[in-house]
Length: 208
Image (cartoon, rainbow, N blue to C red; front, side, top):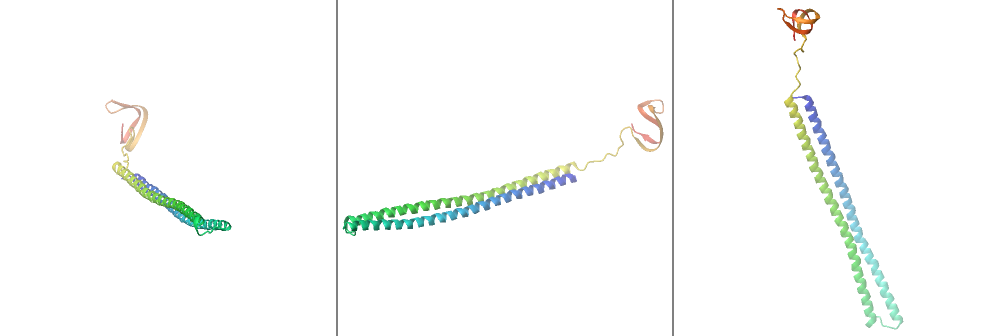
């Protein structure tokens, strides 16, 4: 097995693990941010409800002041405020005030419900981001593992490079002495072998 391939495979594993952890940490950060926003939204919902109660109480005071003003006006005209038309006017005023209070309460409740929905959406988004991050991190690690396995297997199949031990063409192999010249080489018997640098060899081989 090639140690270079092993090193590359190890680097692929480490790099994949680091990338996966980065993706996972980003998903967790997004989850934490969404959870924090969800808490803020719940606080806004609570404040909206409380604001509705406060507005309702203030409107109670307005109703009471209106009825008191009506009584003073009617009494100044010598009308008995507890009977007849004067009493009906006060009842109508209370009814209108009650309906207005219901409207104030419903508006506050709708605002609070909107914040509650935002809070739920934030939490859902955070949970989804975390789940998606875990999935993506797993996919990255699996891909790195497959790539590293492929690299290692490729190195195992090729094996280490083999070293050439044979001498190159035209080199002198062996020991001995030679005295030569550049010209044509003739072996014993007068046959021409090749052109080049040749000489008298003693105790060695000349490889063509």
